[in-house]
Image (cartoon, rainbow, N blue to C red):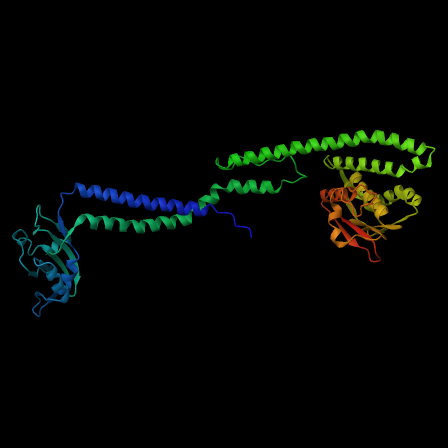
Length: 439
């Protein structure tokens, strides 16, 4: 089972997020540690005592505040025996617990104007370390000044600063998952464009190159390498094409001389070589036909029925000499646009193929914008009907054909936008059907 190619989205999202998280944690730890080193040092009162104190404040019937020893407050007092606090409502009524240090006595009646403060004295045992917080208690809003259990600020601040990193990281992750695919699509739009250009490259459209204008600089070397490979393939194909054309042209003259000498020979055995000479001549012409496929076509409107009749007339002497017959049937023939010479060669090749491998009678049937060549021979097995279009493939080892006729016919028809198919004839034999695009 083939694996799905990896996507750029995963490394472009996950890997940057990992580096961002590591950077945020290191940066926050470093700067908070630096800030702590710049601090004068000492212990701070834990501000978690103020909610406990707020829940322990009650209001008496006369409106004054009082302290109720709740289990939470009792536990807090057990943990810190020097616990003290002062609570004040917005009307200035206050209540206190424990021994309030003298420096804070002056704040009595003025706490409601303060909402937040962290106080600390200069040296141990830090009896003056205190916290001021505004809390919403069951009795209403209260401002609480209190001193209780002490904490080392370094660890607390560092943990708190790194906890803050988590929502920042989640926000960055969400943005990356949304934005990165859009950035990838936008950045690689040029790659999609050259992919479409690459889809248009085939054996019939040589000389094309992929555009380097809109691709990222990181991908440009790959595009240039592909273009260089295409250039080398075009050069190799052109060399091969020139060789085939030159070889075919060079063969025509000695084959023509050989044909004349064989036909004029007195010995019967020599004249029997005429068939082999004819095969050589046909092979040379088919090689030239392959070369002509790459030349510029001269398309025009073709009367397919008239063209079929002309080809049948040209081949009639050959058929008569081999004791075979040919019949042309035109049924609602329509016009076809294409190269007359190329399509004429297709008809010739298919009729000759039917003569060499078929039976005694060949029927060429023109139907609409296509035609069929039917013979009454032994037929082609279904498993061989695709392979017979391969170059030099022979259905039978002793076949007299060159093995290029059907391949050449298929290439010509496909370059005209049509298709060739092989079917079984109703009474035995083979039907080769050629269909051109309807006009």
